[in-house]
Length: 505
Image 1: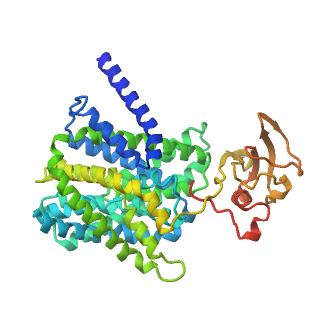
Image 2 (image 1 turned 60 degrees about the vertical axis):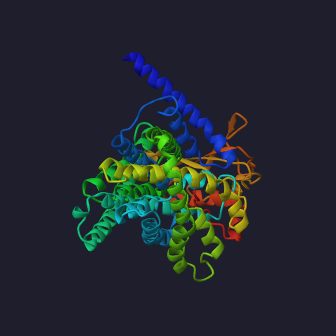
């Protein structure tokens, strides 16, 4: 028994380290790292090393657990200042756009491949969810305009909820599905109830964490992740959308004024990477490469319909109403949104739902979805950066955003901010008195070149300095915004209408 455990730990650790190292390779090639993880799972499976794994129900369960963590991290790292302007189109694209995509793919698959309506609509539902991890892993070298990135991220966080509901409904026996208006009412209820539960968990959790005064900084990230999982579980218990509850709770917590926020985001990011690695390797283990031959042609056909017809139509219908006026989405931006709708782990996980439910043709559906995700994620992932440049939707390079970490000083009614001056920041060269911090905030210590000293008003800040700032709770937000503003535009930030909003990190 101990020998088997040791072997399992050895293999698991080796796979994890290989996957971590593969991230650098995937970034260089412009490929989403999920493809590397999927292929590693295939190599470890029956066609390679020979590990036998055929438990679709276990894969679905573990896959849902991994998606909860991934979606929670997406919510925690979403900045409300960038999310708010695109919330309307994101919601429409995640609901109406999903409906358009499901209908188009379902109709074409039904008539082109001769598949029954239930299975055809299942193809459309399973493939209608986009994957933020797949999109942004290809955009690290070529940043796009902030609102496009925010819209893609918000869509991927929201559209999982209605898609999961549709897949579950379509996987049920037709006789048990009920009338169409009953199913539509169920979808509306699950989405609204899920959003409400997420808001309650987020605001309630933020209130509790601000007053908990936990004895260790490492407990705050654990509590934040625990609150998002609680939101999912509470939503599922009352038959609401747990995925939407997770995302909403994550957004609320990620934008709340919490102690040790940077540590919380770093922990969530690492946990999300671990969930992605485990999920993709597991999905690779589940597939049978010998069955891929028959799935290639249907995958190509369905992929062409999805990429060239369904996705552009869903973007056109959903985003056009928001394209009026000077701040609307241009045709070039809509074209990029259409091409950037990458599929990742979510469709493959969703394909395990009908597979574990014994839906006729579910094995073929799973194989087609797996092949489609691999082919089109590779093709779109490699062409997405040049497409962004060709369409002119890239964003100018900006200095690294300022990172501020806070620790509570409960007895003093104050917070301790730790600020590091990053390369490219215009804090470099600014005197301490030129920071113009509000009354109640003061720079108490500067760490430079391995040493520390108490600054005077004439002290000039330098790149890579670390500042310790004590601020009262009342002026903390104002102090943070002022620091960010000076970091971006210099001591005259107010003249440039720079107010120091906390951008996505």
